[in-house]
Amino acid sequence: MTPRPPLDELLALFRSTIAREGVTTGAGNVAGNTFIDAGLAGIGANSFVSMLAILYPGDPQNVDSKDITAFNTANGEVTLAGAYKGVAAAIPIGVPYKIITFRFVPAEVAALTVLVDAIKIITDALPDAGALTTIQADLDNPNQYKANVAALALEATLGTHDVDIKALLATIAGYIDTEVGAIETKLDTPANFMADVTALALEATLTAIKGAGFATGTDSLKILSDVLDAITAAGPTNAQMETARDAIIAAIPAMVGTDGAALAASWTAALATALAAYTAVRGGYLEELAPANLPTDITALATSQGRMLFSMDFWSLPQEEVALTIAAGDKALPSVTVADLPGGATIVRAIAMFKFRMVENHTYAGANMLDGAQEIQVAASVDAINFVNTQFTLAESTREGGDVIIGIIDIAATVNANGAYAFHWDLAKALQTGINFNDVQMGIRIWYSA
Image (cartoon, rainbow, N blue to C red; front, side, top):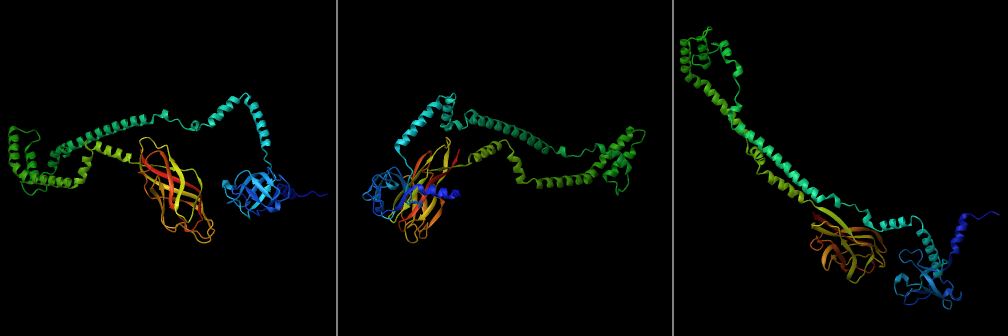
């Protein structure tokens, strides 16, 4: 005989787990923990007890499951271990259901508990039981995984470096003062800029060019040439020295009148060029290096460094749903805890954030949206996020992916330290009942200075 394919076996196994499926024919009790299907009447007392009932199977929005604790064969009423969705409201007519043959008997659970306890006694007696206990204690203590920064002595280290940096800058300032002083000394001494003419061999030069190219005897070079001619190769006599002296004295007025004027003009032109280059801006550069200015510049640099801002984000735990109806009313939102801000931190700016995974127009047969301008508030009545009229417009039976709405209102006056901050949607109102926000979180973003 040819065996059945594995798929048939799986299908048969799946069908064997379903004891009954159907649709409710009558409303259950007001406690919300019974449903009625007249088609079940007469099956037998206590049928389905300890099995699992699933309401709205295949519907992710409404599905719920409960253990079956009793069955009334007279009218087909099934009693559940708890109310549908935990809400005390009658399960209505027309609700699809399935009854699964899985059994969850307290006695069986108790027997399993005894077995597990017996296994624990054996494992506790193992040689490394103490080690396992220690590992479990470590895993239960998050502080085991936090870095120990206390030994780094950051504040003391930074303070030492601050002193070292200031001392280094003071040393540099001393070097600059010394160099600037040396420059000023050279600028104040014109002799530093005069040419060294000792190596020019003026006497030999004048001897070589004596008389050549000179027009008159009043020219200083011609006069000096004549004086040199008066000195014999054998060495000057007293008479020759006196003659040379008198010639030089006589030539002084002519020398001053010619070469002196040219030298003065040359110096005047050079000085004018230097003064033209020495502008007020360039003079300011030298003044900026003065000892009195460096501490001010260092202080300004430290002040600028102190204006650096840091940011941190804080988020709430998720909230399953926020449902808006046609009636205006406050809607609770999850609170946010601000923690771990460093000591001495100053909060400069803070904003709120509203995050949701999905938004839907759930029940209204038509387009739906916000009805009027509204706001999310922090604390009792401080506006944090503004919504405009007709925001979140949704077509009939529409679901859309979520988003993060970031507020622009600075709430630093309220969010001013570590602590818990409560939020609510003030007078929330939809055009029609049925706008639902799913998996909602609130957040706070903080900028602070150390």
